[in-house]
Image (tube, rainbow, N blue to C red; front, side, top):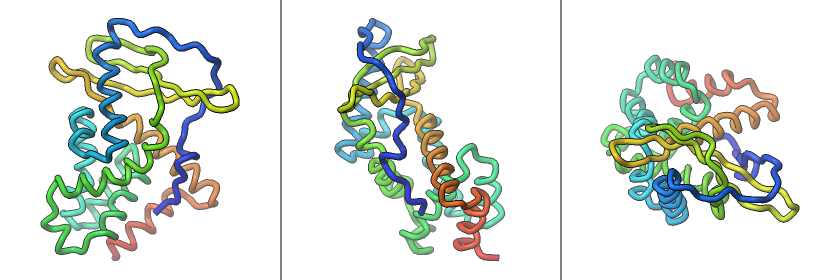
Length: 211
C-alpha cells in the first residue's frame, strides 16, 4: 500500500481571511457537506452513502465487481482505463490483502463498503474537520461547487473545494473530485520514491493476479 500521509494529502492554498456570506442557493447544499463531515467523524458508512451521489457509489462498488471476477485481464483493463489507476489498484490490493479468496467470492456490497470506506474515513478525517463554508464557485440547476476553509496557526488557510450534483430534488456530494486529489497525492508519493506509476500498478497486479 502506498504510504499516503494525511498531511501530504491536504491541498493547501494560501489565502487571506474574510469568509463570504451564505446565500439562499447554498442553504440546501451546506447541510449535505455537514452530513458528510459527521459521517466521516463518526465513521458511519450509511450516513456517508446518504450524502454522496449515485456516480460516487458506483465508483466505490466497481472494485468489488472486479475482485469477484478474479481475472487478471479484466482487472488490468479496468485499472488501465480508469481515471484513477493507482487509487483503483490500491483499493483492490487492500481488499485482497484483507480477505481470502473464499470471502471475496461471497463478499456483500455492504461489507465491502464498510471495509473500503474505513480507509477513506482515515484519509478524510483530519482534512475536513473544522472546515466551514467560504464561498460559492459554481452554481447551476444541477451542479454546484463550494469552497470550504479553516484557518491555520500562521495566518494561512486550508482550502478544499467540493462538487455537488442534484439528484431529483436533493443535492449530493460528488466524491470523484476527492479521488482526483487522492490519485494526485499517490502519484507524487511514487515520484518522490523514484518509482514509476505504471511499474507500481504492474507490480500490484502481478502480486495478486500472477501470470
